[in-house]
Length: 180
Image 1 (cartoon, one colour):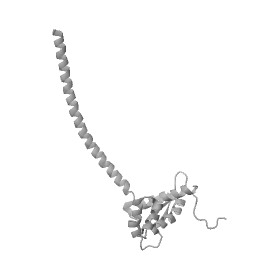
Image 2: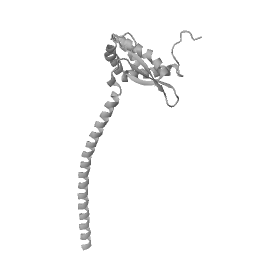
Image 3: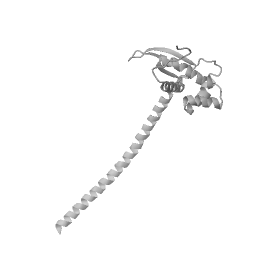
Image 4: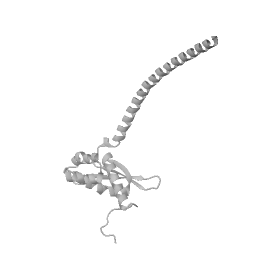
């Protein structure tokens, strides 16, 4: 009999299921909104709410406990400094699950899981910053390539001059050889 057994197995072994929940919780804390399947979202809710409840108490032991779940110092800082302060007066219910239809390939029910009172600007912020940095790098490399192209043209022109000098010297040598 399955008395007092809660949660789903999600067709995974325990270690794989825990790593799945940890990775989903990391993504949810970073982006504050993610899309996944409905059963995964329902299993993720208590996992994340426990982390956020621990994040409301700013102690070393609490930080170590959250670090054991997330394994990333930046995320631990966000949980305690941003999310912990945001939900300080809220007694649970930090996560909202919205059904979002069915997946195209296998018709699995999808859901959007998001933090309540989330910051709308956070979702996709890393991607925007990465895109901006890559554009700056390409602009810098293009301007760097222009400088290197100018240098190459200078070296090519010097090589051509040297080549002309070499050919005229060879011609002079040939003429001198013929005269002798």
